[in-house]
Length: 354
Ligand SMILES: Nc1ncnc2c1ncn2[C@@H]1O[C@H](COP(=O)(O)OP(=O)(O)OP(=O)(O)O)[C@@H](O)[C@H]1O
Ligand SMILES: [Mg+2]
Image 1 (cartoon, protein in one colour):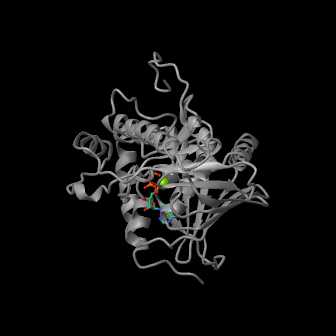
Image 2: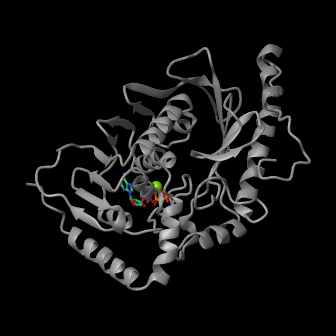
């Protein structure tokens, strides 16, 4: 028989109290449900779970749809009390690093788009959450599947959802660029297939590396990273405003880097792909501030952080190109691909993508 950790009951009661308050005051509950509904999209589930797995230090993750159940597993650290507490709240994150999005405390809630009941098993936890009161954990008594892994399991609600999630899983198989941006997750098993990135040698400029997907050396990708830089003041101000918690220590936002991948399509990533498809000849990854639905990034005009990050990406691409071209001791044919970094874009375009 598995028993709940000591902290479980306190956290459960706190969540229950919050629902009591909310249900007594529809005006208070309205925005909660609205935000909750905004994150209900099956196409975000896998990305969000991977993100959390990466933050938990997982090196491997696996996803499958088995007998009407969505099952996601990873080998990261078990939940601490603080992390579990944060999971049982809404729009409250205990994460600080801005390498990843992981700071709004809503990602996990996207799993309810798959079905009514979300089960979570970890070495110390066996709980389920129901959509109706999505932050209230129920302990699952009885023998839990004993494992060192963390597992999130949802019985899929209906055929449409099943189709959506299968499609999303297939998209990951076809375009696993995000995996390059994770800190820890390097390998992913998708149904019965394995996806991983491997290095095939140092790149032509500093902080760059040639990468191949699943040992396919016929198609090379060049990952170029910037140095880490501290956020400027106006960006810090914006980030603090974006977070629902008050942050009193600015040092808690560590400096961040931006990354580009030559060879991948021009999408903007916040580790995970956003809906912004640019005409740039490389993919860009940075801790952009996103809209709650995570469709795009916050408009550059409104966001000093995004403006600063895009600027850094431009500078990174340009300086990499110049450095590459200036390597006069290597052959012209080795330097010519540097022009691949030169974007052929419409400079008059006023949209976000432009
Ligand atoms: N696999 C996991 N291992 C450990 N802790 C986790 C895991 N998944 C979630 N958590 C905890 O639950 C909290 C809520 O997760 P959730 O994905 O909802 O928000 P977040 O990752 O903090 O921010 P975001 O909205 O950007 O996803 C996290 O802050 C973390 O403390
Ligand atoms: Mg998350």
